[in-house]
Amino acid sequence: MEMGEKMNKEALVVCSDKSTGIGITVWDLETGEQLLHIPTCAAAPHGLFCLRNQFIVASQSNRHGSFGGGSIFIWPLNKPQSPLRSYTLEAMGPISCTKDGLYIAGGAPSGNAYLWEVTSGRLLRTWHAHHKSLKCMVFSDDDSLLIFGCTDGIISVWSMISLVDVEDSGSSPSLLYYSSEHRSSITGLVTMSAGARSIFISSSLDGTCKVWELVSGRHLQTLVYPMSVTAIALHPLERLLFSGSVDGNIFVNVLDIGAVEDCFITTEDQAFVLKVHNESITALTFSGFHLISASEDFTFCLWDTINRVVLRRFNNRKGAVTNMVVIKQSSLFPISNHQRVTHQFQVSLLQKYPQPSNPGKGMATFLSFPASHSKPPPTHFLGNNLLDHLISGSEQEEQTPAMLQTKLEKNIDDRLWVTSMTKHVMEISKHLQCRLLDMMQCRLVCNPYEPDSSPKKKRHKIQSQNQTPTEQSQ
Image (cartoon, rainbow, N blue to C red; front, side, top):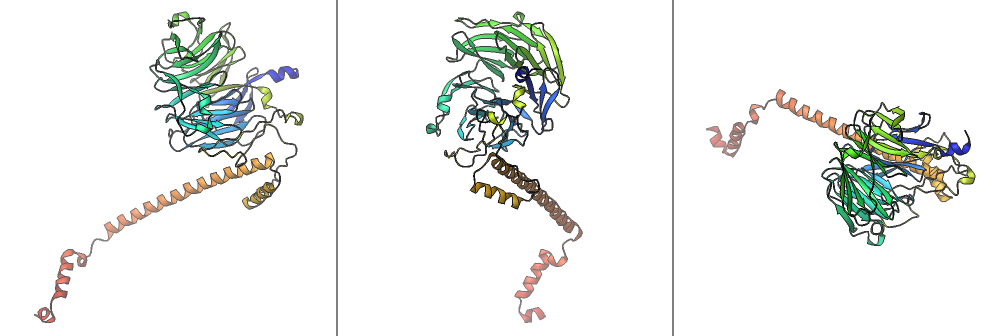
């Protein structure tokens, strides 16, 4: 295979939201081979994306809902190492990034939304986007608008200009518009250009997909299906909408909106159906012109949509795939030294709380290339004291990416140790409380009150003390 063809090959990144033990797997779509496995990840639906074709970003599922905090993990694709772990104020559900990779947005089950600057990690904005859970989100093609879909069917559109205005970060951003046409939870959002105007399409569990004009928010078209729609995807060139349903079928509709002035309805009779899955569709995406579908039947398939046949079927026995991202296989290759300047991109820890801007403080950076001048720490440096000395010495000199990464990993290890010790102390406290209760119960059962301790006896003793010696003798 020529180098050019190898660089253009695509790979599929998949993960589940069921268990962190499943992790992330990268597959070769052409051969069906597993290229890479990243352990310890369970991303929420719509909680996985590729940042600048160099990093995989995932929001970690939290079984306790929005409470207890959450986390967002970032892995560099071309350099196997521990992820950059950012801990958020509450658990994140859907996350997304702008096309240029400068901003990351996240939505929480509480309805709160968050916006970070990637290079500095600064939390630019936190606002209450809705009173119900945020289920999915997407940026417009020009990154000027941010669209949220909620569990109650509400769609809200926000201007990025007001969101990134740090001078006005204390006030609530202005809502551009919202829609309440859907009657159930939003399951997908996609954007596209239709002639001179931009549109976006929403899918819902109410069994419909709706087409909207992006700038004005005008409702253009409704597509009705016999079952709840759980995922959608657009063909990269043709105006074809693929809608996955709860029964495993995938409906394909031709979008003919043109210069439509009035809203109209399209039924399922005007769509052809792709059938191969036995259970609900969980995700849809495209690799080139080939559709990829994932289902709760623990499989995902590569389709030839023209001939309506499955080219390859993958089995993910550990759990149903809920997130899929297509990347270039070349992003998995180490970057040569002469490419490192043009490919440099900084990814920092995402702040948990809004803080004043101070770009020179607290930045832990991942570089998308292995620095040639950095030296890895010796393998015999195992003690924390020696590691602290190594880090403090590096701070007095030039801080290399390797030293910054070492400091980051040490902080993560310290956090894990503190968490472990806290759990241990809580277990000891719980054990001591149980023992104390057992001892009290045993004493109450085995040592009944003595007669001298009765109220009647005590009253008699007090009266005796109050009598004179003569009265006592009588």
